[in-house]
Length: 200
Image 1 (cartoon, rainbow, N blue to C red):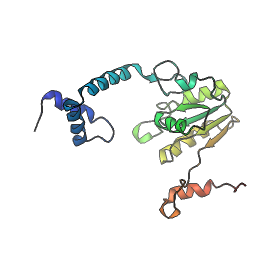
Image 2: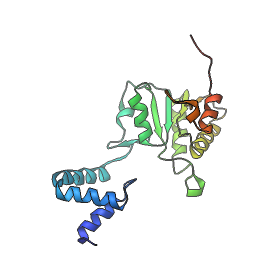
Image 3: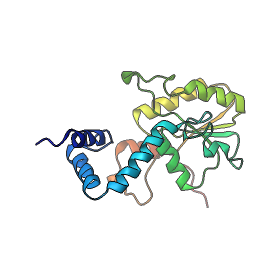
């Protein structure tokens, strides 16, 4: 059964969100039309402003509505260290942990030749230029532990070979509270390779 063209368009528009199929999009649309019109109007206004006003930070490629994002503008951030992440959500996760105080570079993806995503598309040349201009002493490669994430990390490390920069990788392994019997082989292999002496 088809609804009015406006309702159908709303449902189809909501389906662009990740994990939202036809049924979920219909529930969202009906909720907004039945009981959430003020919220829907606010959502529409915020979405319109974000789509036209949000851009990439000139320095780290994170989302920003000015030339530099709040992190890059913060004078209390530690200079000389850059953490490379694949997406703004990865950056947010690290920030919420509250321990890291350096700078970032957001790739907005990872290398994937099969999808036509090469070094240019994710800004690796911009990253290399920034490292040289700012005299970076440590680069933390915090790409995801996937095949593409590992390939991206190795590509960046290879490009920086011989420049005298400390290149580190986030440790991957068994989560706190995890049991060995439930850990997959890939994670277990990383845990063994990244093992450290037991300190007092």
